Length: 76
Image (cartoon, rainbow, N blue to C red):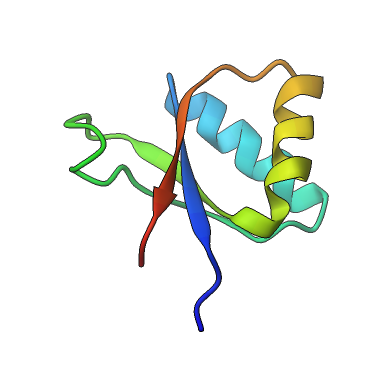
């Protein structure tokens, strides 16, 4: 069975890159991917995360005041 995942959409690519770096420094499994077309027509990037890590991800977002557009379930 595959692990449940979500994508986090950010207002800027720089915020996505910063969040990726911060999450990886905490040894969390994350990956930058193109934003799925069904979520946005923007040609940007978003962060793919494991739902099991969501509490830690949200703590990082809050502690570093990273603005994000939304969190969505993601089926691979």
